[in-house]
Length: 220
Image 1 (cartoon, helix red, strand yellow):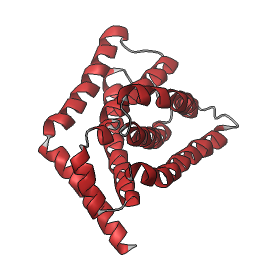
Image 2: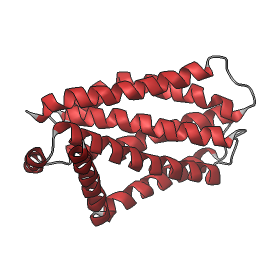
Image 3: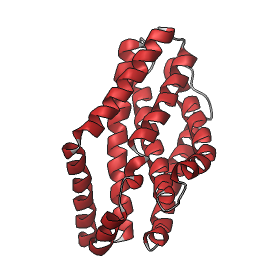
Image 4: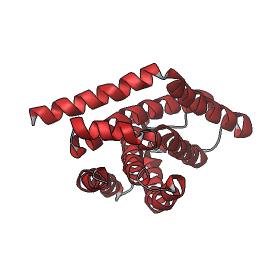
C-alpha cells in the first residue's frame, strides 16, 4: 500500500513538472478560458440567470475537453511502456484521475471568477454554486480521463471520444444545470439532494470503472 501511494505521488509530480516545463500548454488553457468568456461578454453582455447558468456549464465542457481529454492522447507508446515497467495500471490511472481533477478544479474556479467579473453576478447563493462548480469540475475531469484512456488505444481517437462522450456528458451537464438552479434563488427543489447523490454516485462509478477496466487496456 505504501509503495502504491509512492508511485501515485511520483506520477502526479511528473505530470506537474511537465506542465511547468511546458508552460505554453497551461497558459494556452488560460487564454482559451479568458477569450471564450470575453467573446460571450461582447456578444450578449449580461445574460439572464438561466442563460448564464447554461453558458457556464457549456464553457466548462469545452474547457474539460481541452484540459483533460489530452492526458492520455499525448502519451507516446515508448513513454507508456516505461510507465508499465515502473508502476502498476491502478497506480497510473489513479494518478491521472487526481492530476486531472486538480487541473480541472483550477480551471473551473478561474472561469467562475471571469464569469462573475465580466457577465455580472446573478447568484443568490454563491457558496452553493462554488461547491457545485468544484463537484462538477471533478465529474467532468473523471469522465474525460476515463474516455481518454479508452480512446488512446484506438485508431480513430477523436471519433471515439465523441461517440463515447456524448451519451455520458449530456445527462451529466443537464444534471449539473438542475443542481445549480437553487443557487440563483432561495427556492430549493425537493429532489435536490437526490440529484447531488446521483452525481456523486456517477463519479464513484467512473472511478471504479477506470480502476477495473484500465488494467486490460494497460496490457495491450
